[in-house]
Length: 126
Image (cartoon, rainbow, N blue to C red):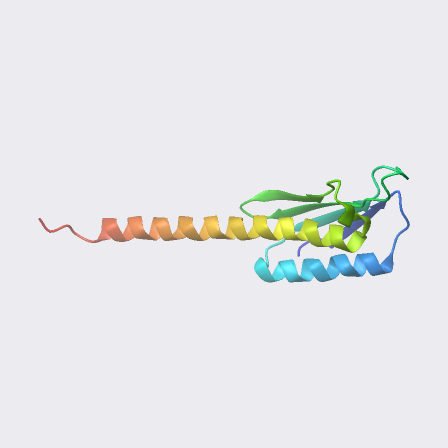
């Protein structure tokens, strides 16, 4: 990664354990694409509703070449998001799916252009 990982905590105390979990998830993501330029993760409690409980929100802004900014979020009203680690897992899963789709599109574009070049180079016999 070209720029260091940025982690922002909103409406909650900074936590070494949570930051470490984010770093581990990012390390797994870097196995899919080594070209991560920037990653900013925001973890917070958007609303202070005591009736519904604390539901964490995780936003990930990831920048990679040939794609730009990818945004992953986990802030549905799911009861599971009362656990910050589940919210982090789901946000990184969303990002992973987007990176895999991007990698797949890039590979198919390369294959398509190679087939076109092969077709142009081989003389047709009629």
